[in-house]
Length: 114
Length: 111
Image (tube, one colour):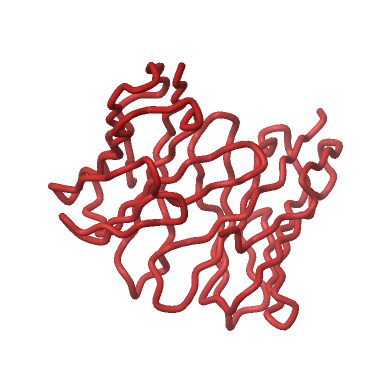
């Protein structure tokens, strides 16, 4: 079974703090994704990585950065957290192009920025 | 940008009834997928239908795809309390690794 894990289920941070959200997958997937989910807006893609050290901006990258130093790990970084970044953050992974591109999701991190 | 839009936004039915939810999208797709999300959890893939397919079944799930209308429907037959969840459609474009998710349908099964 594919397993995608996220470092925290719940996280509370203060405005201006630097926040790291970690995601690890154990199925050697090439692609990894970070989404945020807000009521009424569905899932919105923040960043996507298709290989180690490769990244691509999604629909809402502002205020975020990512790091992928190893194939299995994809980190989302909030350089200076703001209250409008309070959200549910979901990580996902998938096999590379040519497959069905079904995505496998982690359990999510609910981040509150005070 | 949101490609898929689910309809209805919320649906409540009695246990044992069938539940139907719809998804519309805007551009040509390679495939369309449906996911389920239990409250406060990650999404779980349910079923994928390719653009050259019209109907697909998996257990109590039936998915249809009408590319001329750019729409899909998900039917859950003989619903159970455990089917209570949010359901999302997601579209994949040709040559693109990314999925575009809709805003979801919140399904509540009343025991």
